[in-house]
Image (tube, rainbow, N blue to C red; front, side):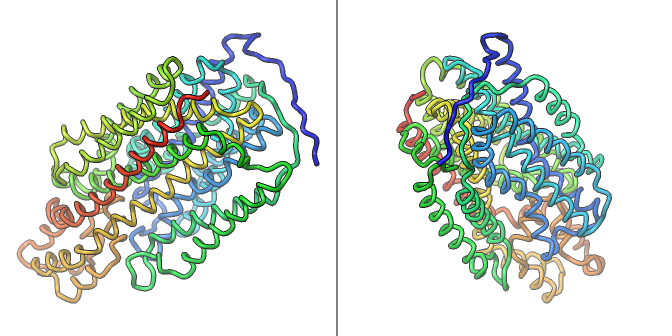
Length: 561
């Protein structure tokens, strides 16, 4: 058995009262750019695929599309616990600094992409995975560094601001990607470089390890089984929403089933290992703490409700609302990011305030109330017509942002405040794993619910609409027989769906202005509205249920710090 020793460090808090604000500023910058890069590609993807000369709507390229979206999230979800544990052992600042440096280097390599075609996409996916390693190191250790630097009575405010930056980054990424990609797609990756370089140098020069460091052996079996199990489950979800053997989705694919069941089995084995080894990477004993366990359940459920929401809203705006209000399909991605700003505003208003007030009045009321407000906002989204008045939509997004903001900061402060000083790195890693895994799970669940809703009625509706406008029956049947995920991706990416799915030769031979009708602003949005509304109700109903259960978990978690 390894001997555990606490390594004493000088405390810059007592020597320099400004140090804690340096910590907060640097770690908030790190979390902001790490989470911006979770979503920055969503609206930029059309320009990236166009820039490298690949058609993302080709069924053979669906895997590229999904791995560009989800690869970064998968890596961060898998590695944050391991990196948090390494921070506890070897120094949280040391691990954090390494993460900033890796993130900066990978951002440079992404921005320098010179290839085209499949080679370019493979390079981008590989570098996104490396970038995810840097992001995981930053995410795993920033909360622990803040907790070390701030006294308990200011910790909620500090962690709240950091958490606000983390979640706001996922919203800001949409806007930044939408602005930069039409100018030059390389800028989507280049924009992170100066901030990452400045943050790296600043962190190396200014941050110091002040927490308790616990030396122990690395739990290799735990690390390997956790990584294999979680990668297997998250990869299965990624491929489960792709078409398979004529089916709308891949949930019947034997490889997907095997990966899901095998991944769950390996994660069970991981729990058995962690309960028996002397120095586990994942301290299951932490879950005996009511605040830590219930807080993480609430964190997971709120992430399930929030994660897929961005995708659904983008599809709603890209594919239906913006075209019906005069925006071209090509400019819809940018305006979708702009029209989602009320959610970010609500989050930025509520997050810091709730973090500050939770220091004075406890986390329970704010976290619970935030989830109830978020659940209400999902109910209001269900009640909205598909072709809504924007002021109504904007108000609902503002309410959703306020609810999520009220919840996030107190939840994270309560979780971190419940941890022993020498377990803050691994505890923060566990919490971030719950949060990042919920994003991937949420995307899989929301896409599955939406695709199921579309597949029930869209083929018949699409075929009838195409034949009514002069498309030959055989070609109409071929387009209507495409997997619903292809149509969904067309809407997500801001493509002109019918113009992308029908050959130009067919459009050129349509009588009586049929081509203009089919590729205009009204045909596809009107066609998809009714099937889409059915999928929306199911998806938002699921999100509302998640938020209500998260509210119960937040109340159970209480105010322990």
